[in-house]
Image 1 (cartoon, rainbow, N blue to C red):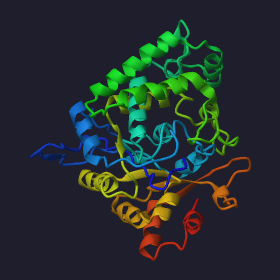
Image 2: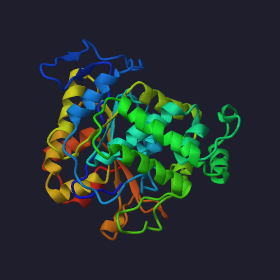
Image 3: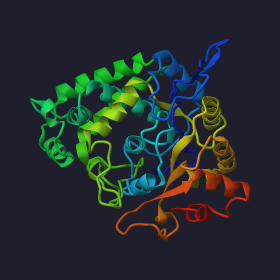
Image 4: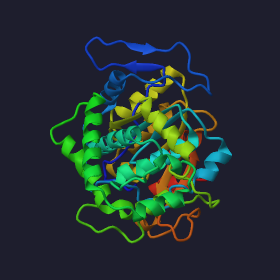
Length: 387
């Protein structure tokens, strides 16, 4: 996603079954004596610990000139074959932005996910998704509740249906205003029940976001304030049906098992959204410390094109320093997006017909290059070491 100058995101801190520092006077940090086994899912994080971690990590919000309800990266799935080839799996996932993160989470199957965004609205949107996952029994019901469409009478019979069939149904289903009102009420109640402190107006924002999805349905596009969406921006339908470079559909909504994995992560409070800049003073550094104490390595860090804005506002150096502190192994990668139109050129790895390109860089390579003197420009950053 394109960000505003100060827009940087980091994933919320999910308790890895390992540690939670409560943001209360005299609170103590509890650290598990050993990290969980690679194939062992950590237990559910208590609601109080989830809320406390969101508060502890969060920084003062910044501004971005869009509601950022969906991604504008038509190429967001192109990186999946390379993630598979490199064995990127498990560990801790870090990311920015809305629900494109869920497709990466479904592919990587991390034990914990942190979603960080400079916009407080992004935190609220992930609380909206958390509620929608809890309300829905399967992908079909999830999409219907999300978009305010009347579900089929036997929604349980759609578990094995293709995503094309599900999208076709949703496209033709009538908008259900009564259902939408009930869902919005549940979203607000569920958000309040998390214990994450809500401000004046947050409940209205939650309802407004859901209402926008209901109004636009699968036709919704990424929109900046005061400007019409670019024709090259994908619709929500495009993102749901998107394919990787091997022509495999890869959205978290394509397979019931992938959707259920993300649902289980939310149910266990292991997807933690927070407010903060990737180049900010608190969130990313705190995540690095938490992961180090938990002896957990980063599997993937999805930065979108936030580094472009960090470079512009002078906070890239702090970002790089915090990235260097993240625990990593030989499989740890950065996933970034590049919009060549920003410079009037295309990246060598760009796929014809797509306005963005997804790039991978091993985390160790990023740190080595930064410690070796860094890059002369943002363009050098996205070209050197990219896969």
